[in-house]
Length: 194
Image (cartoon, rainbow, N blue to C red; front, side):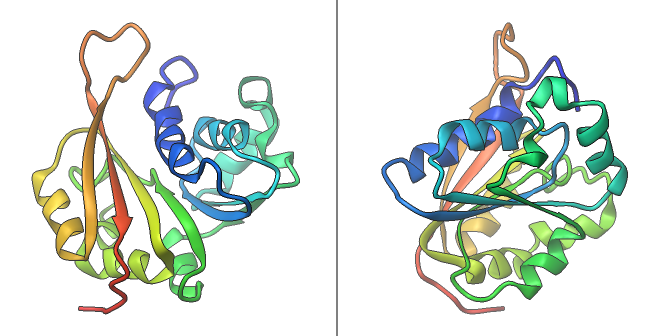
C-alpha cells in the first residue's frame, strides 16, 4: 500500500463505477480498506443513492485511515454513505442474504496467488466464488485486484458462472506497462453452490 502509487486501487473502483453509471440506488461492498483510495474513488464517481460497506480485518488500518490518512483520502470513513465493518470479509459475505449487493470490490490480498494470509485462499476458491455469486444481484459485478495475472483464477471465476474480463492496469501514473490486473466478473444468475 502506498499514498504515491494509487492508480490500480482507484481503477478497481472506476471499473465498477462505469457499470453502475445511470443506476439509481445501489449497494456496494468493498473488501479491504487499505489507504482508502478505492473507497474515495467509489464515492467520487457515484451518486448519493449508492451506499458503500467497507470490510477491513485489521482495526489498525481503520484507525490509520481516521487518524493519519484523512489528508490523503478526504476522511472517507466519515462519509454518511459509508458503513465500516471491522471483520473478516468471509464472515460478512456468509451473513449476507441472497441478492444483497449490486457490486463487490475485493482487495484483501495480493490476489489469488501469492497470498499474504493463507486464510484468504477461501475467498479465491470455488466456495468463495459461489458465495460471492449468491450475494450479488442478477447481473451484478465483482472486481478483484491482483498483483499479477492468474489464469487459473480466471478459469475458476468462469466455472463459478461469471463472465470474466481480465484488465491490465498500471501500478503508477508514469508506468510504461501494466503490472497489476483487475478481474471484472459479471454474475449470470447462477445461484448454486459446489
